[in-house]
Length: 215
Image 1 (tube, rainbow, N blue to C red):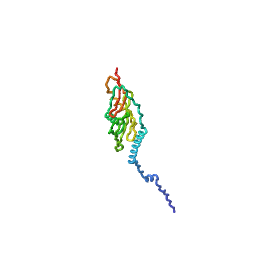
Image 2: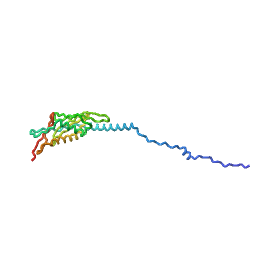
Image 3: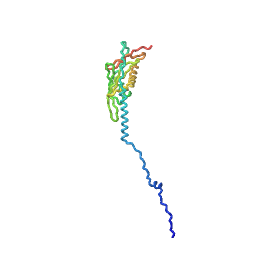
C-alpha cells in the first residue's frame, strides 16, 4: 500500500510591509501656537515704560543750570532806550514754550521781572501720561543781556514740576531772541544801532542803544 505523501504546505507569512502600512495611523497635524494676548499687552506696556524711564534719566542726568553771563552796565551818554513791557513778554514766552520743546498745553503763564536783572516765567503744563491727564507747574529763569550789539536772553534754569528740564533751553533761547531782536530792528532809519545796556523793572525790560548817524 502506497503511502500518499501530500505536498507540504508553506505557512502563510503576512507581509510585514502591508501590515505596517495598514496599522499606521495618520499623524495628527501640529497646530501653531498662538501668543498669549495678555503677555503681548504687558510687553507693550513695559516697552513704553522703559522708553519713558530712559527719557527721564536723560533729562535728569543731562540737566544742569547754565552759567550767568557777565552783566553789561548802561553808559551815561545813553542815546535811545527800547522798552519791552511785561505784557508783551508774557505773550512772547508763552507762545514759544510749546514750539521750544516743552510738551503739552501751556496755561496760566505770567512773567515776573526781578531787581537782579532776572526774568522769571511761571505757568502750568498739562500733558497726557498713558490715559491720564497730568498738570505740572513749570518755572523758567531768564537773564537779559547783550551780545554783539544785540539784545539777548539767556536761560539759566528750567523746572517742570520737580524735574530739571534746562536741556531744552537752547532752542527756547533762539526763538525768544529772534522776536526781541525783530522788535529792536524797527528803530528809526538813518542810524547804526548798538545795544549797550539792559535793566529790569517791575513793569518792563529796558534795552539801551547807542545810535551812530550813517554817513
